[in-house]
Image 1 (cartoon, rainbow, N blue to C red):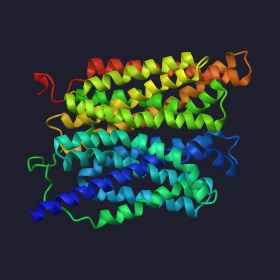
Image 2: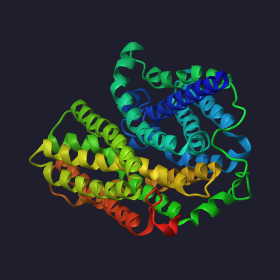
Image 3: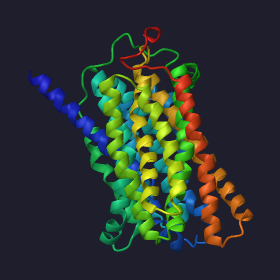
Image 4: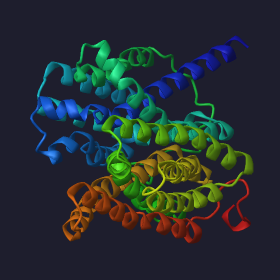
Length: 432
């Protein structure tokens, strides 16, 4: 009985450390966003938007490449050492920013952070599969879907108070989150090892398909994994672009100040996202079905954006309702998507970790890198065709570029409808 209580305490502490580290990571993904104006002023980037935006967007391609590498080396490195490396890189990124106050220092900080984020992607998928029972996995998958929204909310709400606390230092407002990882790292290093995983079985020995880059060839042949990859690529393609231009779209379309637009953007995204990520996880868990929440999430996104674009001219509240509907769809589908790889009967923890790497990496490389470039080109094209003043022309260009890129959401709907099988407890017999 005493050993059981000790094991439960170790498991609870381990879960707490996982949640702490991942929330810190999702805060820092967009860490520079609320303070971009200060960064632009300090490093004379007011006329170099590409270099300014790169401080945020550089995370996507770097983390995608590192995540693919991480999924390949995870079986050899092990979960404990992988997460230790994640926390060490997280701390190092903050230290570099504080030590080297320059644009090069900021970019080095972001690259180190991207490496930490990239390694965390295969780690969390494999850790959930290896350390938790099936019902616990559904809870952890729901939490994993919550982390991006919690991180965004905390980042937007606390950046200004942190700058005030540190006497106007935007460097400290970013780096302090990395420093918070230090106690988590110390606890992780001294966390007692359990004698045997409560979930993993001896039959799950590492095979040729579990290690190296061959694991990705093995996984992409799975219909379920291919559907998840395509769905996330289409989802992130729109999200990466829309989240970048949404505050500017509100400011130009509704005549708001930059501060008011940023406040509305932060509230209409994270708060709604937190609520419906929980709802999506509960629905997928209670019904035993993953496909419905993933499927209808895509439709809600598509319809919500069309509604927002059509109502912004005459009603800001209605536009926000449309964006809220988009956020409902964008948040509710993620827990269900994360559950799919874990539902497949012959998937080992290494496979699940590599699946997460492939899904997120494809979204970051294709969506996070190419979609914003395409959106910018489309906006420039429509601005050049317009006879309106510059602000109205730019607003019109943004609206049309958003509507065009929004088509990827309806494509994702049909991908889920025709390609993704039901993998949950209510799956059909031929999938058992």
